Structure formats: C-alpha cells, structure tokens
Picture 1 (cartoon, rainbow, N blue to C red):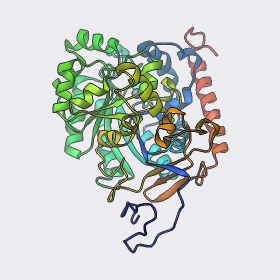
Picture 2: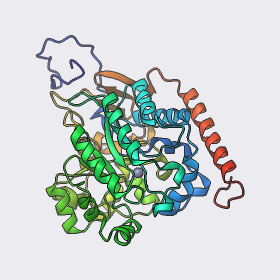
Picture 3: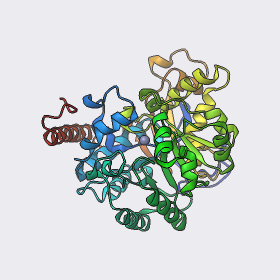
Amino acid sequence: MADGKLVELVPAGAEPALQVPYDVFDASAHVVLPGLINTHHHFYQTLTRAFRPALNKALFPWLCALYPVWAELTPEMVHVSSKLALAELLLSGCTCAADHHYLFNNAIGDAIDIQVQAAQELGMRAVLTRGSMSLSQEDGGLPPKQVVQDPDEILEDSVRLIRAHHQPGDGAMIQIALAPCSPFSVTEELMKQTAQLARAQGVRLHTHLAETEDETQFCLEKFGARPLDYLERLNWIGPEVWLAHGIHFNEAEIARLGAAGMSITHCPSSNMYLSSGICRTLELEAAGVAVGLGVDGSASNDGSNLIQEVRQALLLQKLKYGAEQVDHQRAFNWATRGSARCLGRPDLGRIEVGAQADLALFKLDEPRFSGADDPLASLVICGAVKADRVMVGGKWRVINGIVEGLDMDKLMNDHSQAARSLRQAAAEISQGADAIRF
Ligand SMILES: [Zn+2]
C-alpha cells in the first residue's frame, strides 16, 4: 500500500515484490472485505428513530408525521446526527457513505458544510448531496412551507457547495452531488435546472424514485406520466444519475434504465418496514443497471448498519427470486462494486492493485459464528454486526471495534439529548395536535 492505494496483492506465504515502506498487520484472524459503500441515507433522521407518532405508517402519512418535527432542526443537531450516523456506518465496515440531506429551514442553511466537517472529523469518505424541496403543500406538494426553499437560493447554494467542497477524481474524500428530494416535493422547473447545473459542474444527480404505488399514482395524476417518464421529460436520464429505491418499474422502464447506464440504490430494510415493495434487482442488473445498497434514513430502518443491510438484501431477494438465484457474494457485490458504480467511483469497492486502500476486517470470534465453514458466507448468514478494523485510504479508522479518536459515549449522550430537544420543540409547536404524542 502507498499513497492510500493498494499497490500489490501478495499471495499467502510470499514476500512483497515491491520495495515500499510498510507496517505489517497480521490479518490471519480476519475476513478481509473491500470497504462497504452506502449509497442512500438521511443522517438527520437518526434523531427520529422509533419516533412514536410515525410508527406503523406507509410512506406518505409517515412523511407528513415527520416533516413538522424535522422543521425544528438546528445546526448542532445536524452535526451530532451526521457524526453518529457516520460512526455507526463506519463500525459496520462502511468506508464511504452518501447522504441525502434535503431539509433546510432558516437555521440550517449550512447543513452540508456541517456534514462535510463531521465526515472529516471521522476520516470517512462521503458523498454529500445538496438536496432540496420547493413544492409546499400550498402548491400541491407534500412538505409544509417552512421546510421548502426558493429555487434560486437552492441553485446558488449548490454552486457554492460544489466549489467549496467537491473533490473530483480518484481518491476523493469529499464529493458533492445534487439531489432534489422527490417528484412530490420539488417543482418541474427546479428538477430541470438541477440536472443542467449538475452536468455543467460535473457532479452526480440523485433522487428518490419509484418507491411506492402512491408515488406512481401521484405522478400520473399531477404530471400525466409515470415516474420514469416524468424524469425523462425533465432530462434526468443519464449515467450520472443514481436513484434510491427503484421498485415500481415495468419491463420497458428497466430496459431504458439499463440502456442509459443508470444506477439504483436498493434499500431492503426501509422497503420492508414501509411496505413499499421489492426492488427487481436481478432484472435491473440483467438490463445493465448498477445496483447498490443503502440503509436509507434512520426513521425508516432505523439503524445505519451496512453489513446488516447486506443480510437484509440477501434474505429479501432470496424470498423474491428463489434460494438458488441470489447468493451471499452477489449481495456483497451490491454493497461494494455496485455501490461504487452508483457513486461513479471505480477506485472504490474492490481489492485490486490501484484501488483505494479502503478495507473492512471482520473477526469470527463470536458465538454466532462458532462452527461456521465458509467465512464470507458466515458474515452474512450468521449475521455479523460489527467490523473489528476498518481502513480508509490506508489509515486505520476503527481498531479493535473502536472508532479512532472518538468519544462514543459523549457522542451518544449528545445525540440522545439532541433527539429529546427535537421532540420537545416539535411538541411545543404542535400543542394540542393529535398527530404528536409523547
Ligand atoms: Zn430516502
């Protein structure tokens, strides 16, 4: 390893051929994986985990229960929730995480800058998407007006963030992408302008699409088009676009996605919890679509554990396609190579010469693994939850199951306090409203 990259793969028992200075770490007790890559999350939602008023709801009523709560976010809450979510991901073997932050009230105009700082504090790679909402309830959208922004403000801030933080090319630690929330919370004009801006600036595009049947009905009624047809009308079809969920596509739509070289983030836990449906991963991959994995927001999962999400994907997809059609290697590939393709990062998700030295090392020394034969299969099937060591760009970020340089107890304490404050603020705003109970 040199300059944060893998320079040689040495077979067992052999000596390195290259003369580079190196430290020796004996990984004979570990299962070594490429660092896992998470391609869809909403870090701030870790503050509304298992939130009573939002339990047991489908997507649209679930969102309506939570928007007024999220409207009370402060800068400190954005920081502590981003850091907690990233640390949780890191401990699960994740070395690169994308976040979709689309909620901006008056207090958190610099939410993405705060997230950049949180990722840098942990030494993780992050793709932070400048999300947006511009279509309020008054204009036929879903979110309340206090969390939607003016389109010009959104576009100006997008340019500012790209200039300030986006690192192009191999080895990038921080990247920015543009990500209007969804067709039911953003105007047609803003969707078009965002796509134009992303292409002009050379950054990727992301949004939620085809998550539920409700969304398909909404698009048919409001736009006279199915979700993908609507996206095409907005000039959003292209290889720089990755979509979260991608469940309700028909055959012709899957073929179009493949022909355009697009990517889908499969979020199995969220899809199961919200009963949204099951992503057609095998048809998508057969058509040439890249399939990656995402834990999705904590309010619909509610954890941020990527190795567990690999297990969820394997179980759900076996249920859909049959026991012989999906194996653990395929599920791992979604969380590594597939996710790397979603983010346009050929330098990540593989253990190969020239790739970034991003590694997740797991031990099999817990009762759950005792007696297991295939080490890789056992990680998924026996249910690994925590990496022992994690390396990002050649630097150890987790050692012996502990995040380097992080006081986890203090972080959890601050995070729990922030979650209480957010619930309290939301309760005060909605005094007497039946929707909020504590
Ligand atoms: Zn989401």
